[in-house]
Image (cartoon, rainbow, N blue to C red; front, side, top):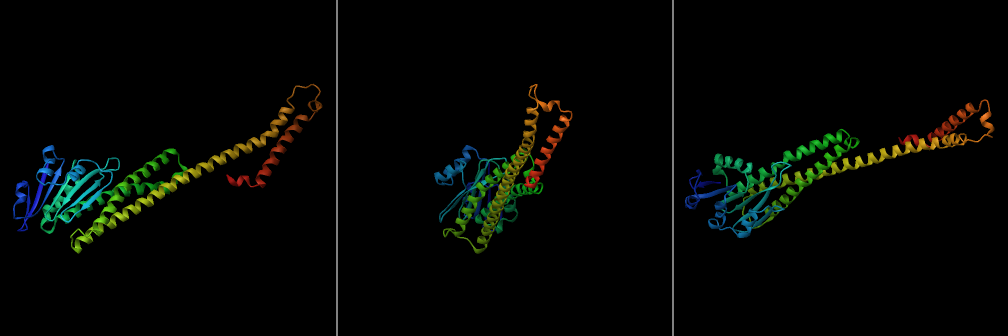
Length: 316
């Protein structure tokens, strides 16, 4: 589906135009949005707009990274859009010239509809470059709820000593860290290309427009820094969990070792006097049983005292 908006030289916003109408000399600039286009509409990129075939190919495939190509006649931008953290990335492609902007997306993207509403309301104060800014700004701000949700959850886990919980909590931490990496893969390239856009000498923009794009760049820098900080927090929780498990395992092993060590001489005594020999004088002693009980308790007590003196109990 195509939606076409234009601004005429009288400062009037026109909606629901045909492609032929945008060629009118009275048109100041126009915006054509390709929303889930049909095959025949896709062909218009070649037949009507005559865009480069490589750019059209990029529009029809999901690139691994956002990209930007800048010439003095046109800006071609491929931006990644993430609707929710469990979804795959989608692309919003933009062709920006002096008097036009063409957006192309194979599936519905709510940000374009939101910006279209703004343009219809205050169109005379906008330009194709300003519309480009609004679209990128909406995409970048769309990452904020996703980042905040992950950040808040990691803070909750940190405050609740997640490293002392079971493996299910750690599985969640691993999932959160994976989601942060997914966000990072979308934001870091976007940050780089906005920087390239700002330093490019081929882009003619006013100082006011430059401030708007600098604001987007600052937002991207802040988002990537938050993501890096949360990745470190997730790593810290994971390392604390591993250290806690190691300490817990060592405590268990030490407890079992101490029990085994105490019972080793007791087992020796029980085995010694459990031998089936007739000529064992101790077996005939009237108080032999009580003597052996006293000896075993004395040995156990002495070993516990020795362990305590060595500070082994302080390790628990």
